[in-house]
Image 1 (cartoon, rainbow, N blue to C red):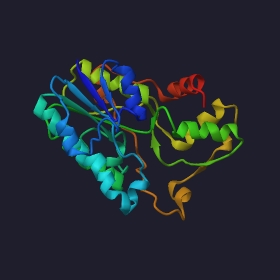
Image 2: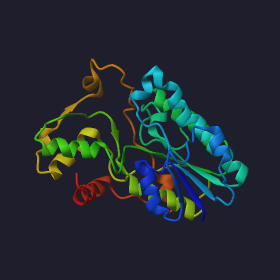
Image 3: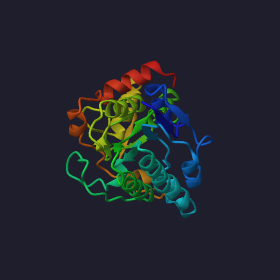
Image 4: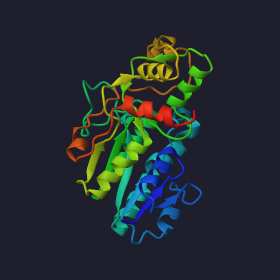
Length: 282
């Protein structure tokens, strides 16, 4: 299978490079997907699948009106450019989505077919990008949450605070599951290589949902600190008085039944967290 990874320099892009070692890996310097002419001008002949790991992911910065055009370019127009290239050359497109396309008020795990209801600029851009990806027949739209990979992330931040003796306040009313980038990439490879039916799939870590404060407490315990050193606060309390903050969905729990029916089951996120902390220098 001939695959091309765009956004190959990010945390998911690097994980995809390990899962698709024969793929052509393009970072932004090699291909700026917001540049329609550059995407059109690339030779896509013979490509079976385009893996789009490029995105604007700075949720709060997206709220700044000065960034709106850049957010749309990365999360909406770029998806349209890649979808057009895929359709023209007979390739499939894998595009990554987010639970931020929802408002977080759904009761229970969120199914793939729930209509979008974004709260934020970032969420709206992801929902509009999803529409571009799903407009072509050959697509896998993979929706995920709370991604942890190489580089800066919540787990690394909490581990650093624990090691420095700092006791943080962490929100306890946003509920979801961690998703480790390697498992996300492995799930994508599974969908592609097994020729799973095209469409939208939720793909996150498994196990019981938890809050960000629960994740922080687990990290603290793993670093030899007391879980009680994490102060639990509400989202409204945490962001009180802070400007430029994007609204967060409180329910980020995605229904994984459709993915599991294809034969792919992600590990329980707490087990993956233990392994991540044990095998990475943080």
